[in-house]
Each structure stands twice: as C-alpha cells, then as structure tokens.
Image (cartoon, one colour):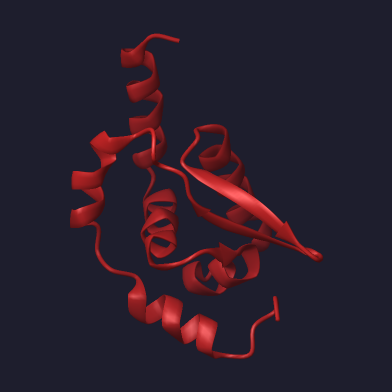
Length: 106
C-alpha cells in the first residue's frame, strides 16, 4: 500500500469521535473493553466494533490476560500522529474514575 493510502486510511479512522475518544483514553493507560464501555457510556458491541477497526488500522494492539483483552496504543510506526495526540482532550479523570472503581476486569 502506498504511503498516501496508508495515511488516508489512518485519518479516516481518526475522523470518528468515538475512536478519537478511545485513543485519548488509551493515551493514559491500557484498558479493557469493559472499562472503555464505562468511559464512553456505550454498549460493549459498539466498543468492540471500534476496537476491531483501530486494531486493523494498526493504531492499537491487544494483550489477552486470563479471560480479558487489554488494549494499548500502537503508534511507534506513526510518528506523524504525535502532534495530534498532544492536542487531544485529556481523558485522565474518566480513566482514573473507572480504574479506581471495582472493575469488571479485576
């Protein structure tokens, strides 16, 4: 795939508010789907659909631990996104609130 095609596909992924919010939350720490459901106040199937797209686009990676799948950013090969991520609104308070409560993934 040509570099311009890859960049275009990546920018299409970032053109969705929910996916941008997910990436902003993952900027704080790795999270499981149930934590993202709580942060986004949406359904698990909706979050899973967005995670599949982000994973296919190479923006997130997953690690399975026990029965839970944890997601983290995977952007080492996309340095052009660093500037954008510096301008994303922080999700730190939401992430801390969700992670400090007794979570589904514990």
